[in-house]
Amino acid sequence: MAEAADFQGMRPSPARRWLRRTASAVLGAPLLAALLAVPGAGAAEAAEPVKAPSGSRTVDVSLDTLSPSVPAEGDTLTVSGTLTNKGRETIDKAEVDLLVGPRLSGRGEVDDAAKRTGYLPGVDPAAIGGTYTVKVPKLRKGISQDFTLAVPVSKLGLDDPGVYQLGVSVSGRTATAPYEAVLGIERSFLPWQPGGSDSRTGLTFLWPLIASPHVTAETASDEQQTPVFADDGLAEEIAPGGRLAQMVSLGSQLPVTWVVDPDLLASVAAMAGTYEIKSGDTTVPGRNQDVAKQWLTDLEKVVKDGKVIALPFADPDLASIAHRGRKVSGTLSHLQNASTVAATTVETILHVKPSTDFAWPVNGAVDPSIVDVATSAGADHVIARSDSLRETGGLPYTPTAARPIGGGTTAVVADARLSTMFEGDMSRADASTLAVQKFLAQTLALSEQAPDKARSIVVAPQRMPTTAQAQTMARALQA
Image (cartoon, rainbow, N blue to C red; front, side, top):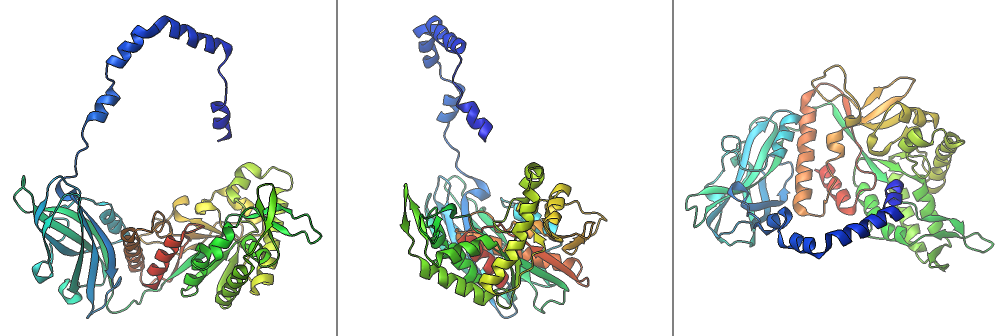
């Protein structure tokens, strides 16, 4: 980025400025007029009208709610959402139907089903139809309409336990196509496990409490050396409804492993006392002491009987250290100190003894140099992600997370599919619902691979989930 910025800031040389002036004088106005008179290819392309969606992409179907996420015998499956006519014509006699089946075999088939977009006859299941169809007499272009489908589970044709395709389609006709056709479809998944699970596969979900740094390196000019915050953004995150407040509240109801940056704890603890906030060239007193105290109290309660992993203080970027900062004098010793301070900070503030022998490179990316840096800082376990490792042995199932990588070090390999499931904009109801159902489908398909083998699967989501992402993760775990 620095090189790009320097390049953009360069001034033309005197010779180059002379060439520009000379070319302008030689070419003159006639050529300029000719250039303006001849339309370029870009102008012609811009003039072309945008084609409206057609076929099974004419209607955008969003699935906003699906309840229950994992149905049982005797339940009624309720699916609601919105239809939006993206075409150029009114759709007459539209019918909204629920599609269920067939059963998918393995994680690969779940992935393939998730990638499909348009309607595929013979591949997509037939509509349940009958009295469970929702009829829409007219769906005008550009107009949206809500729908709700409620179907008893006994009518879904579910047989063996497993993951079934689920979809909602809308069919209808238009003035130029007066025959009935599928004009829109959205797919999801329906896990079916009526007898419960006897799988020996366990799931560990990492729940990160990490934030950007807010405390500056300076202190107020007083005898107490009052800490100075760059802004009051951290207070917004830990206040009721804020991102970190939601993380604590949601995590308190879930079987998760807490992954904590001790720098965040120290910053909130500093906010619980006297602190200042930068305001231009001066500072003003901070006033969110009560918010900070309440957040720390709530967190101390929820982690009391849980598993807590403390990252090195300030969550240093191990990859950057390994690839660019390793040869800088004192870097590794500072990293060791960061791990030592981490344990003391967590014990002092939360009164629990954390595990400090874990390292978590960004996105779980590992290579030999990153592992070397992690172990030099005292980590015996490196949280990796399966898309950064090459699996050996050709196993027909997802192996357990803990895998020795030599030198007494263990790679805790998080599943890449599950770990990246909740990225993106989860504030949209349809995106959140689809993420939950896909997560449930993948975990069930995973457990079916080798139900008799004792395995531990780890999910390591994004480091700083948004509030909507955290809420979606919680819904998936609760389901």
